[in-house]
Length: 411
Ligand SMILES: NC(=O)c1ccc[n+]([C@@H]2O[C@H](COP(=O)([O-])OP(=O)(O)OC[C@H]3O[C@@H](n4cnc5c(N)ncnc54)[C@H](OP(=O)(O)O)[C@@H]3O)[C@@H](O)[C@H]2O)c1
Image (cartoon, rainbow, N blue to C red; front, side, top):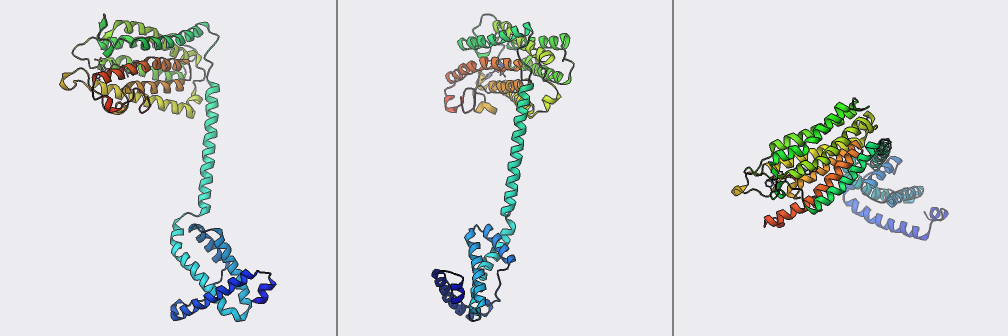
């Protein structure tokens, strides 16, 4: 052993360790001699054994040092085996190591067979990363296509460009007017001089959306009004105003015959509703040249359509919650709405409206969508402020509910 150790250039520390190991082995041998069953044939650290140890070491979270040590020990064993006098010690030495490893291996074999190996995890992670990269590059390409292929909003057509300027001005006028004084309908229309039944008022206000759009798209038409995708967009628009212009007013649950819809917004809102209908009809029938089958296959369009339909469902749901409040407890005209987003925001019906029009804007990707979204923001943001204050002033318990004005949890 001396010769081997010296000739292989090992340090004195190594010798010291071997001596220590021998001493420990003798103790182990004595302990084992008491128990015959514990005496087993030595097992060499064959490559197969090493492989198992490696797997075990990984699965039990041990460091590479452990493997390194086992390999060293394996080498040591060879050195010991060279020396016949030390054969028995070598066996015990190997036994000791193998016992340790085998005990660990047997207890962890079942666990390691259940757990995925490090290689398996690496393969799965690399696949997930690759997939995520592909999705993000596909989405980036789609967004580029989405934006680049959208038709230019401003064209060489003078009337169209004038209408765009007019629409931009209307957004500003609506915001200023609504901020100065809320539109005189509903709870803010009671003091108006000439008032209509709210069902008539709503129907009258929304009427141009249906009439002007149908006339402009289906009667006047344009180069694209016979195409599949523009027709689908037109159908979506018509369905929306079938609900808002006809079904919603018909279903309103008025309070004791109160007439609270001022004739002023009913008629003057035609400026907005006519502009809205004209922009949509012209965009779908003439200027929105990107509205084709390729467009609707993009992921962006699908997300936009999903947003619009989620918003539409929320609109219908929250309108119903308001409608079903009557009769309020004690025969009162107003009570606190509950359910849906009303538990989080005072004007949840407006939140739904904005979600839907945002989705519609993204679906059509044109000034038609931008106009209705921005004009809704201009109307509904200031109105949600006064409505929230109105609830705070009418219901003492309202503040304790901690509702936001328009955006749940935020504002
Ligand atoms: N895009 C836009 O620019 C725009 C603008 C305005 C509205 N909208 C949409 O139009 C829909 C209706 O708007 P709105 O809510 O402002 O109309 P609203 O006329 O104020 O309310 C709708 C109905 O619910 C009743 N109501 C409201 N709050 C009530 C309460 N606390 N207790 C009992 N009944 C109550 C109203 O009764 P009273 O008539 O007696 O008050 C009315 O019959 C909403 O979906 C809104 O998003 C859109």
